[in-house]
Length: 169
Image 1 (tube, helix red, strand yellow):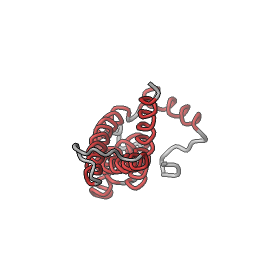
Image 2: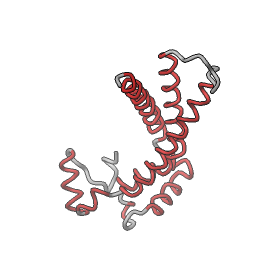
Image 3: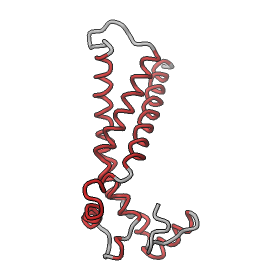
Image 4: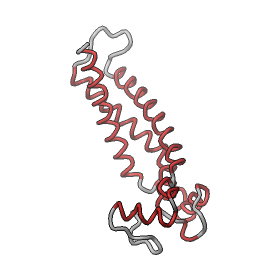
């Protein structure tokens, strides 16, 4: 990700990365950004599941399947609604959590350009100084696609396994 940036180490594969990180930063260097990763993933997951539930409910109601509906949706409708809700959930989650993910990624891979030990505040200031608020959304496109596609594939698989396990009991 930062290969070729002046002052950054170059690596020849994953074992070279591990060797150089441990040599220069100790074992602790392998866990750089772990805390902020937890702070990113926890709200991202909570947002994802909340958005999924809300989106699914809204889609079902718009299709005429309210709480009092006596008809059941077809399997294709079920999968389509779940996939659409998963995509919407991934999109919502990525929009809200991209700034903290951008800070986390920068914190993990950059060394603050020689300005001492990197921190969340230093990294945030650096991003804001470089590009303003837009800097916090660097990498938004790939993250948006990743979370939307992940959400879709994960929820369709989850719901399918859930339905199959109920049928086999």
